[in-house]
Image (cartoon, rainbow, N blue to C red; front, side, top):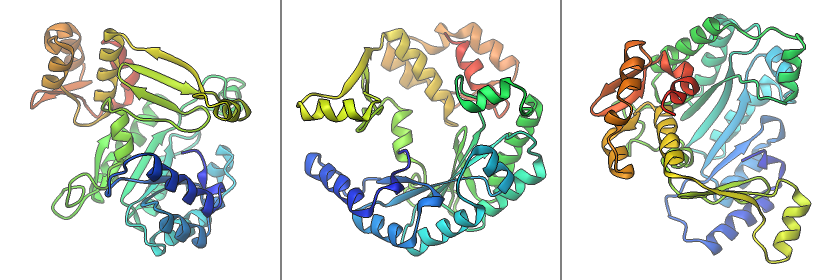
Length: 327
């Protein structure tokens, strides 16, 4: 994660080699690397592939120069085109692109141009994240100072619906609010159905345990969550002293785990598996949240199918608000 493409190939190789020495890695394991188009060369990509990286995720964000400038990106749209071309030439069979939607002044026509350019090379995966204004960030501060006008809620809604319709028409299956995997002609995501989906993200959404290595990285082993020191110097000092570089941890209560299960389930288009929820927590999902479910169904935010509770396309725009109703 982050921008590991600033590292040289040998460093990436050492990290992957150390992982194999320290853990039993499955032969078909997904090894994903996030890369910035502005820091790539085809030699680097070939090196990453030889080192064991088998999935590359390119932070395109936008093909529009004005949007890239607004986002403070140092790469150009041409850099992104080259990065995708080089990734295929380097032998990657699983390539993902990250795009950002809902930028100030963005209209349907310009967003469709971004989407069209993204699908032309048929990457196996697309992430289309709506722009958010995180409290305390420079972007949010500029917004509060009136330096730009955010899109209205209805405008964002229209762009979101445009995204789903366009990508569906071009063979991409939406499996999470912002994530789409390229389907085969038979409608599956690949011969093994899920190959093109982001397997590591799906682990985060399913309560699977994971280990976070590096400053600020988070780890999870139910019911405990922990996070490492954000300060690089402190992180290195702790390791040198043969200590775990953990800054803090928390043990999630049954109620907190249930809330997370609702939120993470609603993020995915398959929704909350009601039988799995009931068995995991020893309660009845429908009985516990009966009134909430009825209200959200009537308002068109959620739907039930095959004993699953999932967001409607309208509900996907209000994930946080809908999930908060279950608290």
